[in-house]
Length: 581
Image 1 (spheres, rainbow, N blue to C red):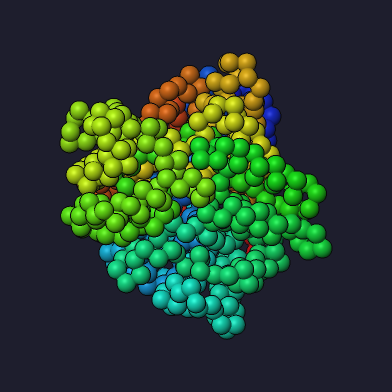
Image 2 (tube, helix red, strand yellow):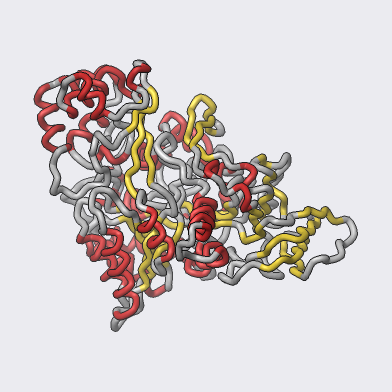
């Protein structure tokens, strides 16, 4: 492997301490040395002057849905270009570990907003594994861009053991033998080095396909007996539960907090979605955060909330977003595939009555605020509407705002593209979230909701937030603490070998130019998806902010451009990271 000497950068090692100007020597995939500048360059060494830049461990993205994309473009360049050098697969109860390709596709594509015409034939063509160990071996044969660590999806193993139909039946629970089979698969996965199990209770994550279309994913149908049976294995092995409670029933958040407690038993390490200052219920993030702090301090719990260091902004084509699966009328609409049938449904008085009733229901818990004043039309065949809110359009037409909204949807369908901010819109509360000791910075959903959101560069957004707060004299994290939050803190909690910039460690390095942590980091763009060029996904573009990214000692990316020949073969770039059994 090539040698590199990174000269005169401000080095943050991931420990939370302030950065120090130093040189970093990279050799044979490792950090060979960190010393005071100038360090004499060894023979046959590429010297990179990084004066004025921040040199830090590569970022860790703890919540992605790259399970599909990694099979067509294992470089995962959209994350690597932003300094991410490790990603987690198997989130939200869904993983590609086992089962027929058709079942895996149907569980994955509608939930994650990825075309089934892309995922299903891909899996049918390439899938030759059917166990946790075989899946890791398969990943190890790919030319990975970043390192990869995995959760085992509960929906995946439930469907594999019970059969998809039974796993999606509310009146069917697994037999004792089936519970034991699921647990045996979990044990195998933990032995193979999976971090733990992911579970999803969200009612609005729906199945794709035809036979079981619009049913929630299999994990939703389990009862607490089943959950606890599997959780006990996680406790005994000291592994991790990643979970999404049922947002329609906020009590499930507290159920998982209590499940984590360690009084007279081993605590269950739990990483829960999500810590967001949502517009629907102001202050709920503080209730969750304070509850986690109390449980961790006094009840022996080990619970964390995943959160973003930025606005939770959403773009929508028509109604094509998960939030509109929160209520029956939205699901009825999205259940239909044919655009003409959708338009006809929107014009039916009975459907409109149901939609209006459910849309305007104020006491029902929900994620999307449903305030049509708080919207912005981005594009539409009628250019006169661009830049307006739906409320403004309705007022100009002299219509009821919901009627006007449905009329526009019926007329333009997915050609009507609009934008809204769902949460994290209050700077003081966002600053509170990123400083909270029981929040894990991440939750990018990279590889999913491709037309709805783009949080790939969350690490840069955190660094920008902290730098801006410091410039404004607002008490916040130090840069060293911010670096730790998205590197070593996560690596240590999830028990993976990453996140530390120290001699002898694997050389996963992000080099950040603080002078380019500007509003460009926040700007949204559209770009073709690798392997599916006709499909445009949302991305962020801040190439000057990350001049260099190293993975496993290889120079992977320069100013947003993946380097030719990286990764040139399996195990030369990103590695499959396994938790020690």
